[in-house]
Length: 129
Image 1 (cartoon, one colour):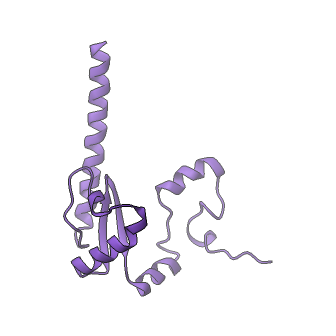
Image 2 (cartoon, one colour):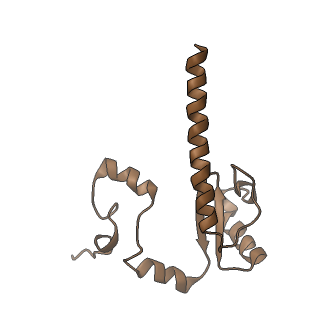
């Protein structure tokens, strides 16, 4: 019984170390984007009080850091928050860099390829009525 628990613990610890390594590698690549001070493993969760004040908290961080791009970590999930309208419009209208996130890849297994889960040009197709 103790051997099984030891194997399970070692597997979980290995998976956590693997995820932590890739998380730190990503944060290092995004080092040019300013971010508030955070805690290991929980990131910047404590910066946000609740979901109703999240936009106010993001505006506070924007003023505090003095930049239009902010890197925010929720646990081991990295998010880039953009406060610049022109840059956001450029990102959303450029088809070359429009890729769906991991959440959409999870949905792709359920509902297949369609307008919701497709990348690139298929995603920007207009419906003719």
